[in-house]
Image (cartoon, rainbow, N blue to C red; front, side, top):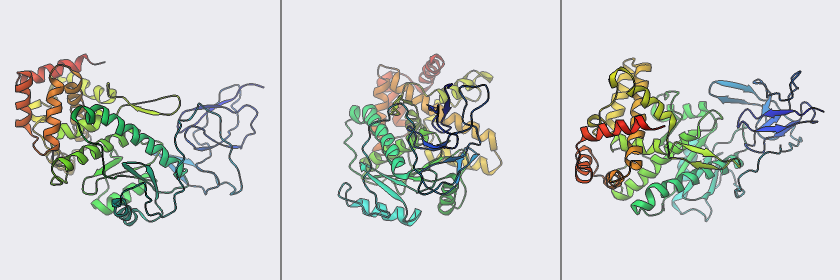
Length: 415
């Protein structure tokens, strides 16, 4: 009997299905998706799962549509009595089993009393069928149920990833800057689909967000809102989660006075993009990697190598732009039909902000001291172009034009 291997279309893991009858439903031991064993391909010992393969996420649930970056996979209805064996895969990460989560549930003793208020807000905004996972303090993970996944297992995955973000943030900023542990409750709401995300944003913002925006951080409610889809990148969670952590310390440093998104753009988005990179171990464990964000780097290098750097954003402009300035610029041009050119320019702003944080953090010497002191200024409500320029003069004995030249050389040398 020849060896038959198939690949899970969601997580990419391969499994040996030799001798397993066609049509048998098996659960992926890596991402929990439930797959149907396909017919073998003639002449091939390593058939892949066909794109139109019938898939059901979760045992004994009704059929639905799994949205993955515009591609739809038809789900197969299953008998409620059917059992779904788990496919043997590489060892899954050792994570605690989630507690029994009543639906809806008021918080247990693992969360402080303020969690009652936060849960009630989530119930009001997203419905009382939301399932909570409370054993990942300071995070409160709220999952919108769906036939497309096992909500309790999914909540553990999100809790693990948020734990990885929290640990990386402590390692990079918390420890070096002497920031206290987060004592607040940080809610993260995971909706079931893009359509659910769009409905919420339309109800709240009175408009549908650009398809490129796959998650948001709501400053007024201090919560991350995104949707679960096998095509939505993990870095969205990390990016928005970094905003949440910076905002937490900003509220603490300003005694709650800065509740909105006030702050310098390069710092706010630079710290968000700084945590987008990650590595996935064979066990499935996620580790954040701040070495080089290759996607952002490619965007920036293309700009530096074209048209004599005509599109490059000078540091004199970048360090003086606030978050509000950026969004006024972006929304103004988009409303005038800016389209793809505006989007490309916005992506450059993000890329350059990531690169500038990376430069200050990784260059060595007093560059990190500049960043650390500016971090303290920003979260205490004292950030701005003049403050940053003063730190550059004090610690590096340079002006912005000299720093910009050094910055460009640093980026061009990155690989």
